[in-house]
Image (cartoon, rainbow, N blue to C red):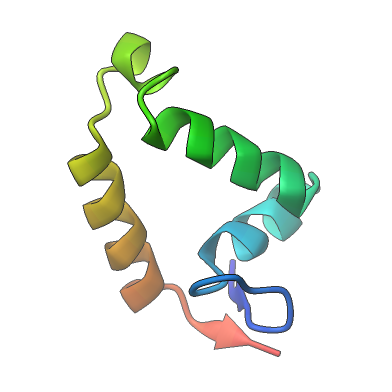
Length: 66
């Protein structure tokens, strides 16, 4: 898995994950935003702060590629 630096909005983490899973980057971004805003995060027990930390860690440790 690599971050997709050609299709990035912030760090390319979600586009890299979407490419690895074979799904649309836009769909994964919508899912992430819904979870981040708490609509789905409440049921999964994921807070916005935890998601932010996870995203930053993924940004730091997943290598980028063009």
